[in-house]
Length: 316
Image (cartoon, rainbow, N blue to C red; front, side, top):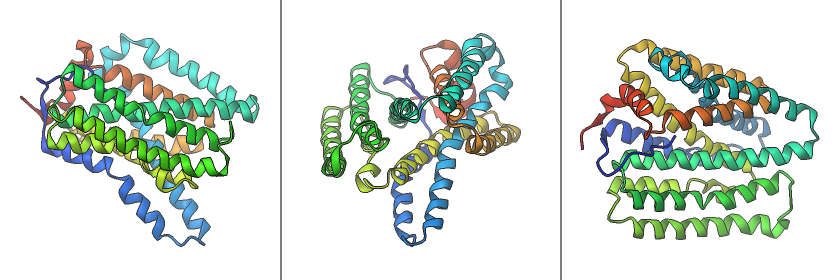
């Protein structure tokens, strides 16, 4: 999600939502130590742990169904048939065929593209969350933060693509790159916080520091990318579910929260069993709808979001 129009005059977020988002973003630092406590010789338990995290990290995609079921978004959906119907259908058909008919190497390249878009999406959401927690940013500071948040995506994608077999970094390179990456992120974090020190609150600094180092699990687990990936992917999912949970509660009726839970359950069950291409297609649909819903420069989008989140915001 991305809050494009939030500026220095943006509404401040109440502490309950701020604390929930920060806690969700810190999840990798809780999950990774749990992995270390597992018996390394117990392959079954480790595999089950990884599967649970993977399902949870992708299950949040099902929460996008909330926008299809929320009557308050009916006119919004009707005005955007390409976003909510046509493009999702075309994606499911085309990507489903790619995953079943094309050679494995082609699909590996396709998955590398998907990973790049996925990591970009993660940082866009972190960008929006930083703006929410900080109460907005001026245009120049917002552009700087956005650029610096996207820079760590590049080495993270390189690490993942090499493990998918698209190219080889060599045994030395595969171990050195994560180390260089974490050093790079620390430098970027320092530069960002120095440049933006007058624009960020204390909570904004904390959120920015976490966001800039969001892919740090790659450094701690260079030989187990699935564990590293599921750690920060679960954090991303928890962030999104937190926002969607507050949106459901914002209507003031418990039934909306039940609807959201049903959507999440669908996401976990369906995405766990569907073809890889269909999973990617639904994930891209999630990206597409989010890009529309959270484009706060659009008056209709802003009106809808504020009708759901308004009670958790307060005037600046």
